[in-house]
Image (tube, rainbow, N blue to C red; front, side, top):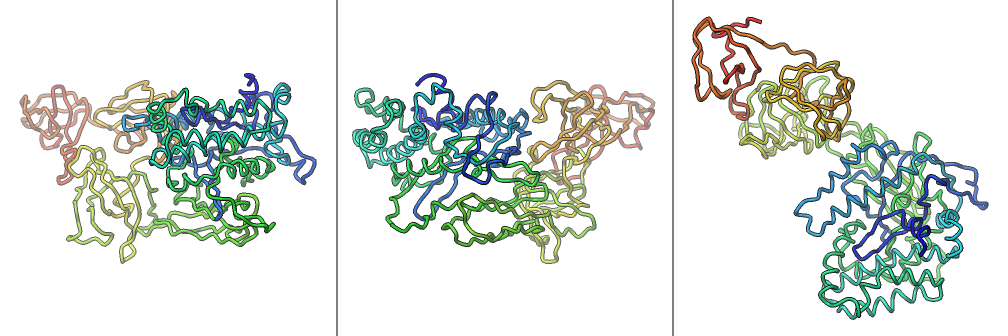
Length: 623
């Protein structure tokens, strides 16, 4: 295949398997030259234009005779990306962080996933500022955007066949590699199946189609080139990668072994012929959400035999699913999506979910309706709702961190009794307050709100404990500032670092305890926040480390009665004695019992060589 045509047809997705399976894109790779979808002369949407506001991430559609289901490729991520986020490197880095490359990643599936995600985001960034019209068939639009030499090489039908061939190869490999790995097929039987199930599907087509489709996997399925050891190792490495990248880890081996190769090709061609408008959903701001086919191409697998029927009524697979979303007022997902499937024209009913800590505030008009040939979305909106027993109390989102401002207990159950208390946390100074990550919500019998939490005080003996704490805002509050402050003071004894990115990477400076910094704005980073300084650098907005406003502390003290100096803030390991009248420069401050929540804490002054008491009976502030 010439390089120009190859660049166009494979632009939508990087290699799915080590063996070279590629899902071609139906859109032009040269997005700077033409990214406007052509119109058709046969629909009522000829003159409608669509401005993309966000893209759906790609997915694999699995079709059975009972319906269809979508499996997202990036199950750890939100399933949509706003166009404004495509060029935000900090946001992208947070997405990549969900797939860490570590030693436990035996088959390097995370490495492939990260690379594929990066390619997809880069590809979409070129489409984010374009307008689209939606009448023409998806494959027709792709063919029309081929360069002249591409159209000279492919007829329209052969181009569609070649584009759909990626699903055939994917389906074949998943089916037969699984059989081989489970001992249900020999290497030779896999080779024979390739000859009998794949090659005939492309007989009689354009020579280039046959050549390219067969060449994709000729190294795998040519007995003269692939010995038993090589083939076994290839299967062992490729199968888990293929399943992960296609989002099919939750599909059983028994199902994969029933993949219908001709049915997969038929379903792929049918999906390609749908109008572009089928793959766009209008958003509240007038822009549209582009379906996952724009980011990853059409990926479809047919499982099981074709339904034998002469009934012209469309089968359930013809009907598109209804996806039910559960979000808060800011659009954040608070419960897993549900997918409803059924026959074309049948009624559907989407039910609201019971979400701990949230109250349903908006039921959409389309909570009931009928299955159509277009995908539909139903969105239920919720507001945080928890009874804490105090006026004006607020709820911390699940996954965020709170700390205790007063003495509290950690309990086995939502109803607090001395018998069910697992741990008592004494009231501590700000820098020593115990922190907890919120994992859920509950209410006591008297209606009092509770956080279900995990202790995240990593240097304490209590680390990792789980249970319930009060959600009363007089006792537990979010650790991170939520609103902008004009200035902050560094209070962490060890100071803080400033970075060039909000992910707190690429260190640029270090600020000592007591330094006052000017703040330009506050930004979110997942479930935390960062302060942006006047110089554009990012610092933490953790209340244990920084405090709003200017905090004044003693700079010099005079000894009123003799005191000792110690190596630690717990006043252990004495190393000097100061007599009354001695004046000392204060270099900072700390509190005792930093990681011991069974005790309270006391202020200490850091002086040259160690720590002294800050008790006003022994020392007096000079300035």
